[in-house]
Amino acid sequence: MLVQLQYIRAIAALLVVYFHTILQIDKLSPDAWLSSYLFGKSGVDLFFVLSGFVMWITTCGRTMSVTDFWWRRIRRIVPLYWATTLFAAAVAFAMPQILKSTQFDIPHILASLFFLPWINPSDPEGRMIAPLIVPGWTLNYEMYFYLLFGFCLAVPVRFRLAALIGLIAAVFALCNISGAQTTLARFYGDSVIFEFIAGAVLGQFYMRRTSLGIGTASALTLLGFALLIYNDYRGFDLPRLLTIGIPAALIVYCATAVEIADERGWRWLRVLGDASFSIYLTHAFTLAGMRMIYPEVIAVLPSDTLFVVLMISASSLIGIASYYLFELPVSKLLSSPTMRRAPPGIPTPKPLAGQ
Image (cartoon, rainbow, N blue to C red; front, side, top):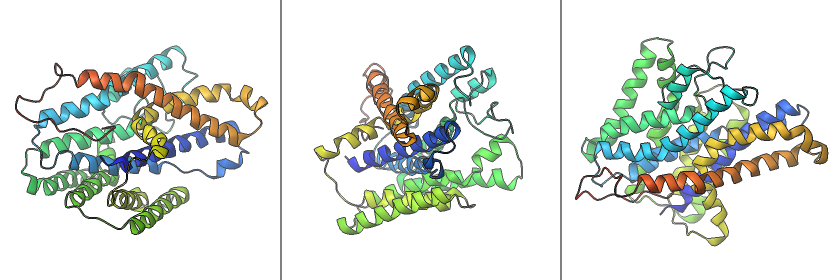
């Protein structure tokens, strides 16, 4: 098991939580010194590269039907996402003042549930393509990638990577060459989708057992994180595939090119990695709640920095609770023998932890 993938997931989730925390604290206390240090959206790019990598190494060389692959991804993603989406819809209906970026809009809710790109009605400019839970825009890309990846499982392994690249590139080209400015064309024509491809390519390298020395791998991984955060912070006017995607790919490549033991001292990071999906989906609710109590808390805790730490800690703890109380039990239930769709005689590959 590549425990380092869980470590990277943990870091990715914390980066995203930090990013949204700073956005919140900037609205609540514009003079907070941390407001100038806005970065963390790059955690999403790490997730994208990791997704392509994991999908490749968990299917390459193993017998798996297209429908079984899709069912595995659905039961991994849908239960928690639907639960949080419906909860957000209920809050938007009953208490619309709590979630600032959420409106109760039936077409938007349905599009969110079925991972369809849709203009978020809460955007005054009418351009933000995001579901009811705004961070869920990444899941629209995830499910799109899973859909196309599943089709490619019907292709012989030696041609599969080329087929995947060709299929995604064809859709990307169609969206951009057509010149259409529709929501679908804008969404599926974004070059960020190639971060999944980068992960799949790295998965191919890994299957060929490409390795690095521990010193080289560590140095390059640190360099990758430095570039990732610096480019994220600077916000260069270039496609994020170039400014953030490349450092993210470097991190995943170097981190998986060495063997790392699951040390007890790093178990907390492993737990955060296991719960990263829950942290990602629930932190918007946590931050909304923390925003409401901010005036009371800051009166007894007169430090914006400490409050940011509190917000990140609370988001992590609630995400971990969601993982153990909802995500993990539901996953086990849907993975039970009565729920499996794998045909008799076809081995069921054991996924990496957290997948």
